[in-house]
Image (tube, rainbow, N blue to C red; front, top):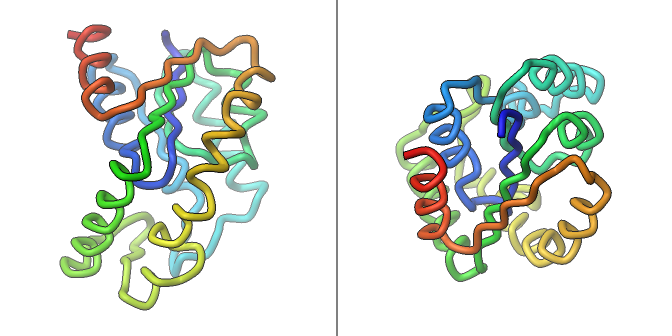
Length: 172
């Protein structure tokens, strides 16, 4: 495993897991959210976002996290492994609530100087609401999407504990 993509529903811990994995492997980590969310929460223009994914995944070894379909044809085609953090809703949603609450309270800077606000936290595309529109849909659609990329080895982890154990077993 040299080129790995980590996916999962919003709030599943993709970035945290991907960073830990990249660190253990000693390879670069790429976060699609950082490339997509420009200042003032503006979405990156599609050509710029795709160019960033293209540039990052042109390397020999890497770990990238994110669910963006708009560059799946680039990243998934170049990856050799897809790690799917497929946790139940009752595990993920409380994490989203906690994370959002802490980000708003602490004014934690995110990508490109963006910060979560109470108003933004309740927006239709914010994680608190986005989760309800996408969690079960992704669980249904992901196996079919993975089947379109025979180059990928699928690692489907169904709990935070199994993810931690897999990471330790693979990269002690």
